[in-house]
Amino acid sequence: MVGRGGRVLETATPDTGVRPFLLTLVPEGALWRVALVVFGTALLALAARIEIPLPFSPVPVTGQTFAVLVLAAALGARLGVATVTLYILEGIVGLPVFAGGAAGLARLTGPTGGYLVGFIVAAAIIGWAAERGWTMRVPTTVAAMLIGEAAIYAIGLAWLSRFPLPVGVLEAGLYPFIAGDVYKIALAVAVLPLITRKTS
Image (tube, rainbow, N blue to C red; front, top):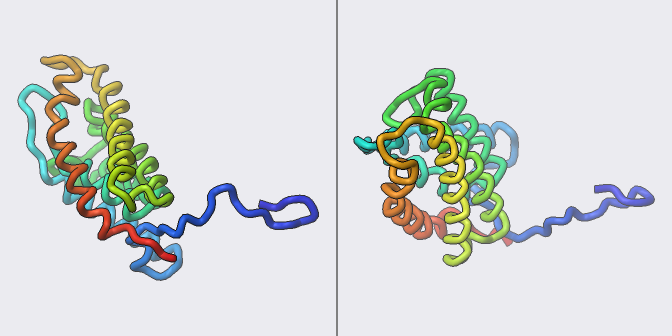
């Protein structure tokens, strides 16, 4: 930012000394950032292959949420959002990256589309928190993950409620996933000390 007299002013956000881990593994440069994003979409696609369908819900249990949590912390907000966005675009154009190897625009416009959009918001929240050192301590890591999960469910349930369901929207889109998400957060908290580190 440039102030009066042409002086360069510091940005409002101070350097926290924390850098997402994956950014420490590659040299500076746009091509390396693109490579990280593509790598992240591949991990998301692999996580989506872990799928447990539920007979009473169009929303399956998958490994996608865990991948979003960890990738956002490992890449930061901008690259985390870019990764999830590219992943969704890959699925829309026909690559078999969605849950169970599905593809196509129907997944975004169908009952689970809100959860996919929620992944983008969660990546922004958790990546922002990681860049400010939240993932260096367990309590703030858990807080960041819970806020990210809340965003996923807020958007996912709002969208899911538009569709006819054999049970209530909470029974179809929230309650069956709570135990699994608690486990995913616990696992992410255990992994994050390995993928987030001080750079100064």
